[in-house]
Amino acid sequence: GQNIDQPTEMTATEGAIVQINCTYQTSGFNGLFWYQQHAGEAPTFLSYNVLDGLEEKGRFSSFLSRSKGYSYLLLKELQMKDSASYLCAVRVDRGSTLGRLYFGRGTQLTVWP
Amino acid sequence: DGGITQSPKYLFRKEGQNVTLSCEQNLNHDAMYWYRQDPGQGLRLIYYSQIVNDFQKGDIAEGYSVSREKKESFPLTVTSAQKNPTAFYLCASSIAGPLGGGLDTEAFFGQGTRLTVV
Image (cartoon, rainbow over all chains, first blue to last red; front, side, top):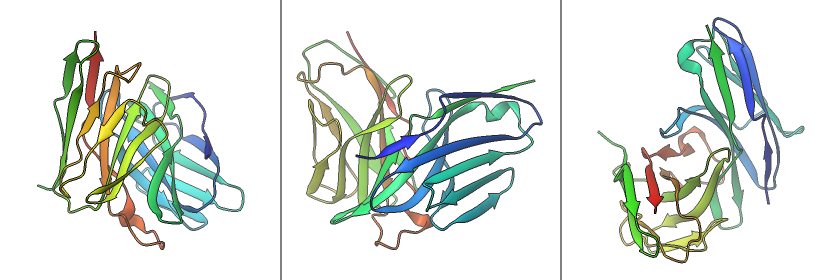
């Protein structure tokens, strides 16, 4: 199986920076995705990393270390609308199975004014 | 507009009845997926299909069935054998992609169907 771990809950204040960590153990790793999900809605794509390093996209950045099985999502200048669940997902390509995503349980972020 | 559509958004059924959830996409994606989401849990894969007329069980396939007769459609049937069917069901699609992966292999999700069995 795949083990994907992320904290259950985090809180932060408006304007602050928050880092959400994700660790994984998997074979056939071929990329890591971060999704944002507001309550009762579909997840929406935030970022993708397949090589080591940092990917920056506006207020959001994502980092990957393949050797450590570790990623983080960094959210800057937090806004109230950033209150949501953040899902870490690992893509596995193994044998004839391509593109299967394994999700962590999600980190519920609450942003306070 | 291209996208993935699930219907209905809310569904109520009596215990012991089978129910089918619809999922349609016009993104020309080969791969389609069904996930179940329960409070405090991540997305768990029920079934997935990488190509028409082929599908594979995910981690929690018992009590569910699917078909993939057309590229655009991947309906999920929740059967009476599913012991705890009340949940939020999400359908997704993606480019199946070569082993090289790539950014365009992200999964696009439908809006979800909240099924309540009473």
